[in-house]
Amino acid sequence: MDKVTWEARRQRAVERLLQGEAFTSVCRSEGVSRRWLYKWWARHTGDKATWFQDDSRRPHTQVGRTPAEIEEIVQVVRLELYNQGQFCGAQAIRWRLEDLGVHPVPSVRTIGRVLARHDLTYRRTGRYEPKGVPYPKLCVFRPISAADSGRWQPPIPVMSGHPFRRKPATSGAGRSDAG
Image (tube, rainbow, N blue to C red; front, side, top):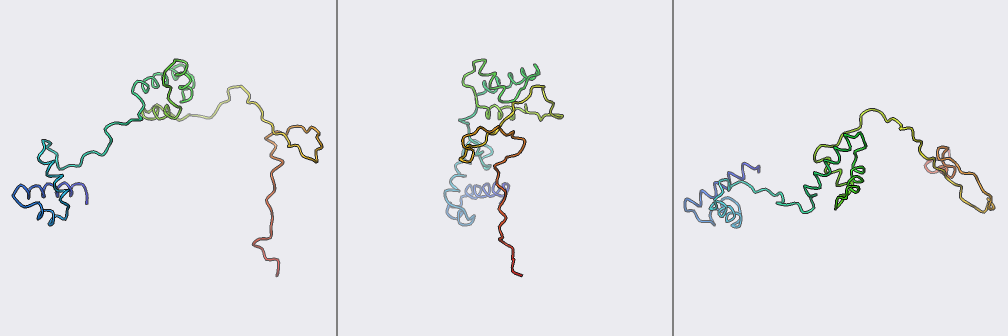
């Protein structure tokens, strides 16, 4: 049943009680429990004009919610970094909060949630432009084995592929060699 049907059913059941019909007979004819009927009867006798509507199931409080003061500080720091033309992501905001001595400093994930909640996240536009600082090159060293007999081997650049990767085994599974 939809919401409107349940509300009409509650009103109808209480109307029958107001006309003097017994609880048991109303429960039988409506196909509901006595507990259900007593619940709506108690709500009807209250002061609420919308007694027949469902109450919200949303919690009254959120225990783990970030305090409003911290959320406001995160927003101010984000706008400050943005106006200065600096990186204004969650990690940069966390570093700035640590510099300011804010306590407790929220996690990077929490800062990201706060930014999303207040629509302060924007996708990057345009292509990546290098800043002119070269990244360090990573090197892979060959493992020492008995065949090397302790000789030093030069490092292998990562970009040249991995020399230790095994080639996939080409087994005869699935083939029929017998003709």
